[in-house]
Length: 537
Image 1 (spheres, rainbow, N blue to C red):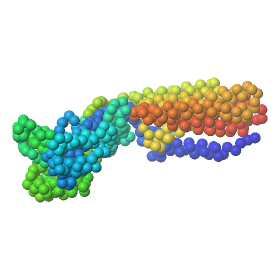
Image 2: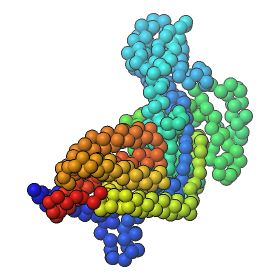
Image 3: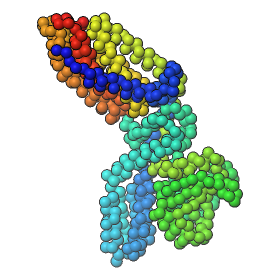
């Protein structure tokens, strides 16, 4: 009995057309050049094929912990004042123990109020303990510190991704590097200027405004002597930009360690030019909350100096002439590139902690071209050899296997082109492995059909039984391999993920071609055969 195959053939043709569109899109012409361009535009090449920058960066998570306890010092001061609890000072007593905050000099009569104020707000993150003479100690809990470190790495990844977007990189890899603690893997295909990449990515661009305790001083030693040779824990010595830029003698300032506003409290930043003197500058805007805080500080400190600090360097010191709300300018001897880069960095957000280089390297485009050539050659040769073997060993049925194999490859490339996937050198290896897996499925089916024929069954029954019995084995082998590929994708780095992706897509395509497409071809052939005639296998 002949089968109606119109629906199945229509589905196969539709899948073929969709995948061809995924591979080539709509070329501008019919020339070979336009088709190749369409192919390369839709299937992106990874770092190992296109060339580019490869970085492994370590996030200095302790800096974020240090900044968090610095913020806690300010918050504790404000909360105790609101509760009318007098105190001598709130500070971090040991620079090496960045998770400990100390409160000194609270009145004995206010002990219960101080305890309730500290425990009600800070007991979830800190262990609160009392000491002699109205002293209190807050120690960050280990689980809170660990969670903060994890969030710091996650925030650093998001910030780096925002900054990389400004470089115009297609298909970058930015993810946690599982081979090291608090490390990030960055791969940028097509980028050759490694120094520019490092400048954009690693710059903390943390703009801060600090109260000035004293300065300028001609040397760091002179700055230290101004506080009798013993720098209080709540203060810090910073160099000015004059020393960095070589525009004058060395200058240092003593600043309060706590910033009035900093980092993520800046809402936007745009390059601009001062109309009075023509100097380039960056005009920034604070968040509403930070703007109110800044206004209260400047209102209470009119006539006092404040310092604009970026990257641990004093960029500008000015006296507060009147209260300032939520807008300000960073002005200096910036080049056009510097002021543009600074505005981008501030808009994309400050890194929560600085980054140290673990590994940096570039992959040349010529090396990538050689990899493409060798990889594609291996895939083509492997596929031709396999197709020739199937024709020789399985005769007419080998044509069936070869057609399914070609469609398998078209589906794989069509999916990658349609979703804009990135092809890596291991990904090419995944394509080659998919070819072998596709043939393996056909071999299982064809050998089973041969067994049924040797048992004396008719051609249609042999094909029916061959596909029926081989189906379970094919599904089993494919599912186990896909599970392995999923593990590689979850825990592997960029190129390994490329291998897992192409292998998984290829295996899913193979289930469609080896079973559905091959069966349709067999049924179409059986419809044309005479009664009693055997299939060529």
